[in-house]
Image (cartoon, rainbow, N blue to C red; front, side, top):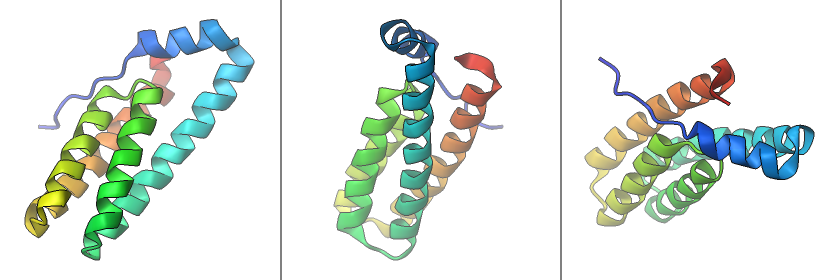
Length: 115
């Protein structure tokens, strides 16, 4: 069974209220694209045992995810950064896989109308 994901729809609605629909859509879309690219880079770094890069990318992904209300993804990315600092390659690989799964479900939830 897939773990549930949490998307903060109120945070997304706040962005829309503050920026207007058109500007919010541009910014959210750009940030989601950056999230996707960050997930891909994190997974690539994790597979090549690039610990410093994995930590950096996991921290970046956590920040980006928080910006657009991807609560679960931000948490998993933060856990990945902590784990990567320990150098536990098996745990890093497992968490990178979890990041990928949570990212896919989180992004699908946003595109399916949570915001």
